[in-house]
Length: 231
Image 1: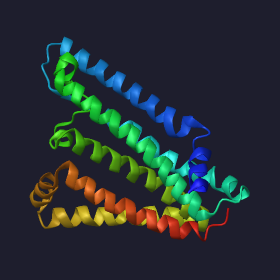
Image 2 (image 1 turned 90 degrees about the vertical axis):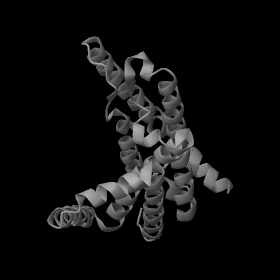
Image 3 (image 1 turned 135 degrees about the vertical axis):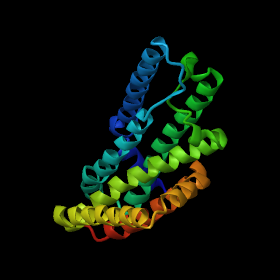
Image 4 (image 1 turned 90 degrees about the horizontal axis):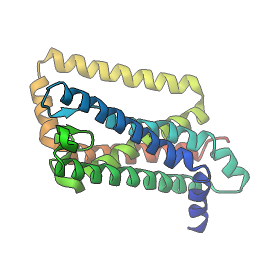
């Protein structure tokens, strides 16, 4: 356990990666979104105003997941850290970062609801479909999404280290083809209404539960791949 905690400390030596960069991106995206809402409000529009800026800090974690393996794993091996300790220590560091973002989003959503969208009916954190299950549900959703995106980056890096850029590229092309086939099938059989209804029925918490399952699957694959990865 002490060695796993040491991996967390190693990952957080450069706090910019796990802490400051996601928070800076979050703050900048929030400020720009509120500025846009204020401009729209001052022009006579009443809202409510919603945007996609809240995704920005989450997608930063994709690159955090990549760098946490490609930049730190070789160093950890030189320090005689086992691959198991490196994996679980890195996941713990990622969970801490995701929990911080989830707390910020949950608290920000409560403030927006209490202030009628910062007084201008503009919402950055409290997206309707995310907060419908309350602050705990929103926090769970954002935590899982942060971990899932981080794991996508970490998993991609393990494949790259194990098999190279060509295999990784082919895998992502294959994923793209599967998505395209799924879209074709849904359109061909005219079941978009049922698909959308099912997604709406799941709600944010239900989608997060499926996201958590996918995160665990990717984590298991990453762990098994990491055991065979050459630094």
